[in-house]
Amino acid sequence: MSQIKILVVDDEARMRKLVRDFLVKKDYIVLEASDGEEAVDMFVENKEISLIILDVMMPKMDGWQACKEIRALSDVPIIMLTAKSDERDELLGFELGVDEYISKPFSPKILTARVEAILRRTSGALAEESLSAGDIEMDISAHTVKVKGKSIELSYKEFELLNYFVVNQGVALSREKILNNVWNYDYFGDARTIDTHVKKLRSKLGECGEYIKTIWGMGYKFTVE
Image (cartoon, rainbow, N blue to C red; front, side):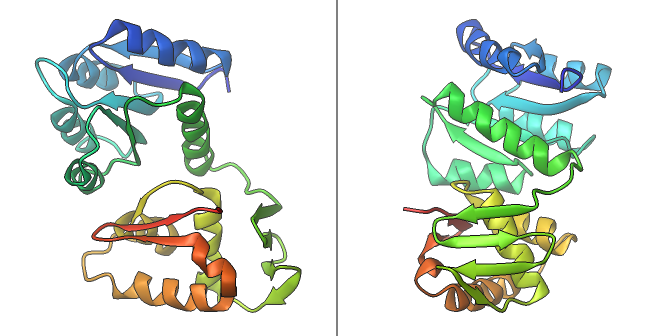
């Protein structure tokens, strides 16, 4: 893990230090940039960067433009930080290919957990043998699911969709991101494919189907309450 490089981009030195200190404790190598232009230049020079934490409001070049320029070069995971909580900003972030969107103020521990979750998904590491969330238990190797101790039958895609939801608990997921990760292709049509699968999955999960929350106009979030 010591070889994993993370680029932290924020015009506030105090914020960069706060994030850096938590990431360094996890043995990540942390690079810093104070504006969008510096971030793009640094990314071009350091192709080994595995993830970018990118603030929105910055001088010279804001986070949106920096994201666009980096996305033209790479699919490196990007977490956007913003002081705004406007849903339109969040939707714009997903349209630009942002992997996650976190509003300030935030818990550095939560941010670190999100970083680790994204890196697990993108590192190609072996999946966990089993997963659990609330009353749902998944055996990944056997491709089986139990709800409240009782086995249920899921199709291959329903299983993969549930797996993706459980791994990304608490994360707002756009339909495009779900399709790209579960179906493994870029999807440019309507959202009926994923909505149909979510409807069937909810039905088969019974009461646990309530874990899958709809985010109107954007996608879904899996939360166990």
